[in-house]
Image 1 (cartoon, rainbow, N blue to C red):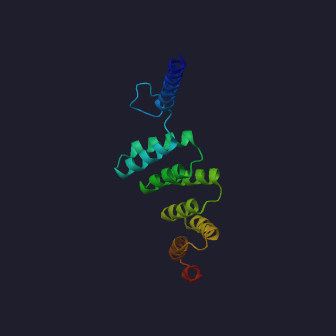
Image 2 (cartoon, one colour; image 1 turned 180 degrees about the vertical axis):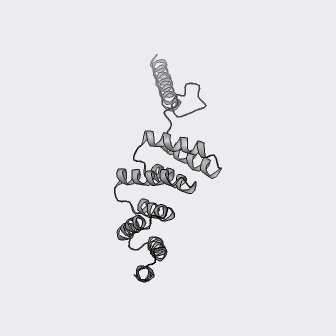
Image 3 (cartoon, rainbow, N blue to C red; image 1 turned 90 degrees about the vertical axis):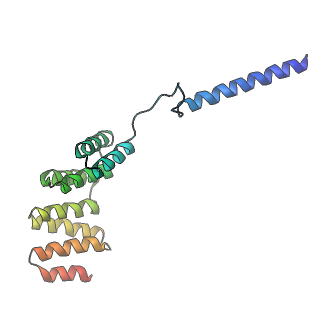
Length: 169
């Protein structure tokens, strides 16, 4: 009968639709036994590195920064995060190398230049610090923090008049 044919067709369409919806969501549903996980996303490594660093697990943080930078060698947050971690640990040579790597990969970046300048200053390399801090201020002249950092290094370098001029602008 015609009614029987319509019911069979409708049932067939519903089964195909249900099967299609299962197959398209199986890849997204980790509770589904057919779930196939994809590769770890770079953002996960960055988050893990930050959490591990906050918890004091520095080897774990370093591992995640390295994994992130393997996946995305120009990841700005990973490059800066890794250099800052070394800076905080007092591993100044590694921090400077990290900041310089970030500059080579990212170009002139005021955040990286500011951090590198502070690192140079903490190492007693005041002239290098002044050079990169001046560049950071030139890139972001409205940044009070960058001008303050430059002024502090100018005072440290016995250039108080220039420090005052830096803060007055």
